[in-house]
Length: 425
Image (cartoon, rainbow, N blue to C red):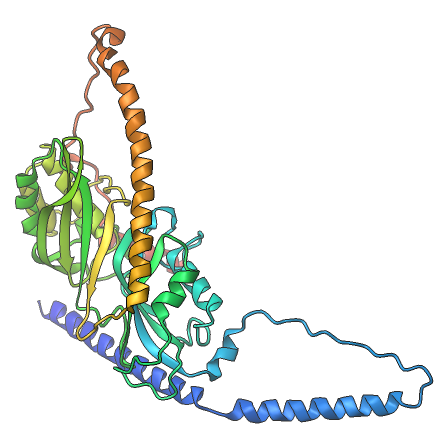
């Protein structure tokens, strides 16, 4: 118990120290931006260039044939270092994206495209980026995986500003970041709003809570049993049996879930109702929500008892995670990120353009759904006559192996021991 208290104290100290260093770094960067040394350097370069041109003219004046050469300089590409001398402002952006075609949010992924890479392409295209990614003090709230979408993702970084002296609540005369960026972003990524933030702000560590939605069709599922089991997640627990373990980077698997609910959505397909699992917590582990939902589906299908949640949360009793497949990634949505004192703003023109764009996207997806629905209707007559084609044979249903009877993955201690062995070798 004493060791656990020490670990929590050390973690809080590291987080506070990180925020202090971020604030100091941002302060120095702001001072550097106001430096005028580059202007002196430019004047020296101009004088040097003029003197060299004059010398060249004198040397060529004695020649009989004077040839005029027009030297065309290459138009340089966008260099973010040039933007360092512009006024800048530290802001947070609220971002929405449909994640189906992306290989996750983070640009560090080996595959392309990612949401982050597309955002930075738009920032460079619109000349809003000040310095490179590191110099812009960039931070993100959630690192969503491949295929996962978001409605309320939040990022923070320095952007070019129209205002020479920026105060946190001054928006008059400022660049319309929403309008400018949305014109450069692909159709499945949109900025919803922006907000000035203090220098010590970090989109990851300043976040008070995150809420995820997982959408699913409720047909043939015991929703009452799923909701009863889901409430067992509320509170602070060790979720190592409900995540993909990363023993190299994560040493504490305790997380706090603050709320859980299952609610109907305003969407139906024939007689099938769309539902949403809503999970809110301070932070989540890698693939934690998808693992939680996968076990809830087994309970809703009647394969497992709600008591299996209690068993898997008891890591003293079950230190190794049973092998099971995660729930699919496409229905998962990062719904919101909670911060203290952040009020995102969007101009009326930008909001109108955003509504029109999202309405058009909805119509396009409805058209695609209508085509598939027509194809489904054309298959129905074949489906009715399927019994005669099957000659009365009944397909055997796949048998369910209880979670507690399945093979298990290596425990955290075993993974750490293996990593230490590799480092020694």
